[in-house]
Image (cartoon, rainbow, N blue to C red; front, side, top):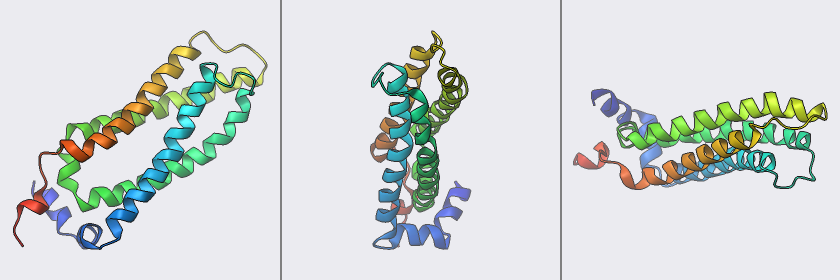
Length: 165
């Protein structure tokens, strides 16, 4: 807890928490970043499940640079949100679950890009595992979003509000 208290007392943490616009701006950029990242991941997974089957799978490769941008935006803004209230997030198991879902979804997306896009570009049929990989990715992407929303309501420690000024 001393480490979390130290983070809360840094200039960045105080600014992110007390500036009338900083926390709000971090939230907006985090939402945009997650929308680009998760939205692209969901679109690719749905295409593997047969949605928009007339569209060539290789055309969805253009989503990856947008998803990288979203990941960068979500990471930077997420660090700002974390700096503002570190104890709120780092003591909540749902925060860890959100990261596990994001990591799992990203790894599956990497597998999809490596295995399934290469197969499709050679004109071969998708592997029989494609639908199960796509469903797993969808569950993880949606789990990450759900966990992110639950963070607003499930914290048990908020040190900044607990200490009188």
